[in-house]
Length: 200
Image (tube, rainbow, N blue to C red; front, side, top):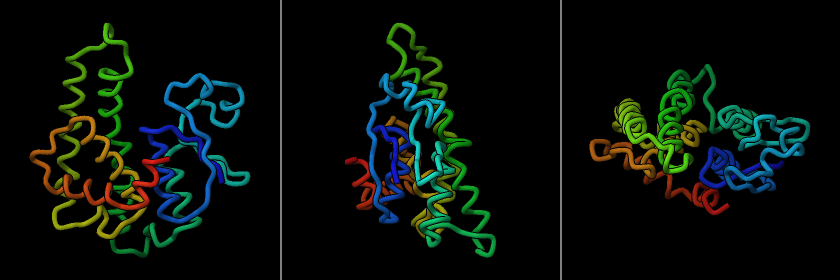
């Protein structure tokens, strides 16, 4: 199994889950924006030239949530929830919440504060993105009331939406009114598998 990876990207989710599962993998490391990510060799595997990409035999996946669903279904059924589980709908909601709600304003904020050269950044757009991000976190804060993990016990959903919560905090989202999410992020960051993914 091979993972195409860059630090501080969604690829951390994939490596984190593999560490949780205990599956061996090889890493092909990039840095974000590296020219080799747009090379013909890599775009034959991932036409978008982004990370993560998972290669498992003849299977190639390049969407982090799809990768998580695949790995969970194939190698870690104890970390997913099926239709027979009472929290199946909750699990699905929070598995997909990150990409639907949290990541769009994170992406906009990162573009306006990190990726664009200083003379092209728009502080108003950055402030608006941060405001939207803070609003998306309120629903997750309510969900985490009285819970250790986003769908009760630790699941694949924590490696997706939990990772987005961690990134939001690191980027400066206002966690003052979000004590449940703050504790949640602390618990996730303390997991040995998360630490291993961060060190990759």
